[in-house]
Image (tube, helix red, strand yellow):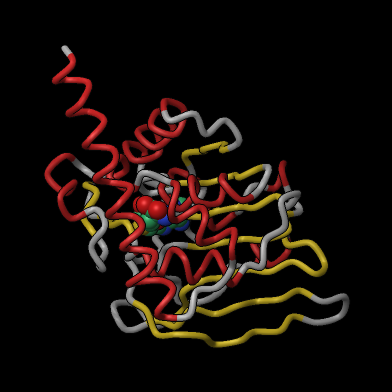
Length: 228
Ligand code: SAH
């Protein structure tokens, strides 16, 4: 018995060490400075958001497959997008593209309420169960087409889109508060996108092109109210 307890304890310590290494060698050296973002990346157990076979690679400097043809983003990209949103604890944030639920969990460590939408039914329900089991009570998961945002919960202080879009969906701009920020990968289908930081001011929208990225595509589903 003592031996089993020791092994479980050791396993967790091992993952904590891997996370520390990830934060130091993948995030800090590339300029991630926001204390809340670094704390969340250090705390959230990324290995519990990937399939069993991917666990050994959970803290590597790369995206990983999560099933249903989708991926969990590289840790640096998760941190970069989170930092770019300049979050305050009281912010209400919408994520489009729940995937594994990892990015939502990172947000949940920093802010009070997270709303996240996933278009693939299986992923949406799996992420919902996982986040519940891990105790992220401030994350609300919905299965649906994120193109439409979540009007009943709008407006949002920040919106994060984790699938590559060919343009910025107007409903998402509409659902941002004045002073709100949105980060979204934008680019031609199957080509390199750029992360774009959108800021909504009283009378105008500003867009700032940040780093080049590759994301799985933002898709639409007619049955879920998709199609234009
Ligand atoms: N944020 C995720 C990774 C996202 S991968 C994580 O931390 O694991 C991108 C996800 O966006 C995929 O799961 C894909 O199914 C989803 N997606 C693509 N188009 C969408 C849309 N229109 N609405 C909601 N989700 C969408």
